[in-house]
Image (cartoon, rainbow, N blue to C red; front, side, top):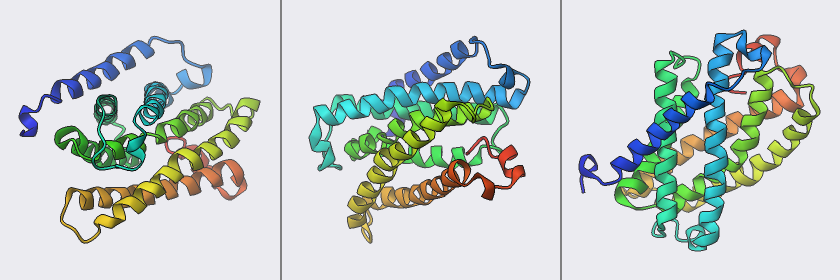
Length: 247
């Protein structure tokens, strides 16, 4: 069925509007003192609150999908479940919302890395949504949201200038472990699986290209994370000031 007529479109629209409504609701919450004095930090705080909510829901949902349908760990292309399909639609809606939010808030230049990531993620998810292939791969990819729970907590504390808190110090080690378990490990597993499509003119080859680009981005982010949290003396002071959006 052509994407323009696909029944998944209401699901995507509903998910996107849900996140838009969530953002409006979260904007009514009180802001930390260090955040509300800066319009950029205020926007980023609200943006991260939505991201944090998405990570909690999607991360737990992905784990439940794999528990209910463990065949997705092996049959990455053919395995399908309604729960997994709805999860992919739900997360695609978040990426659509966040892309629009970044653009209309005029933060595209500062957050261009997020835009590139979102476009690649949506391209991969749409293969599962519109062609119902590689839904298992989409669910495995969303294990990264478990890691993002702790990564987003870290960024929110940095924006609030709370790096000296015990919670930040504990979280940076938990975040590192979660980064390995739920970001690097699933990404390596999926990359190894999709390498079998190299040289073939299939949807799998298209997804492999996206996956390899995401691999590069993840390794770059990982190096930044290590420098910022564990080798701060090697990070220039100006970078500390300008990189809170991505580090």
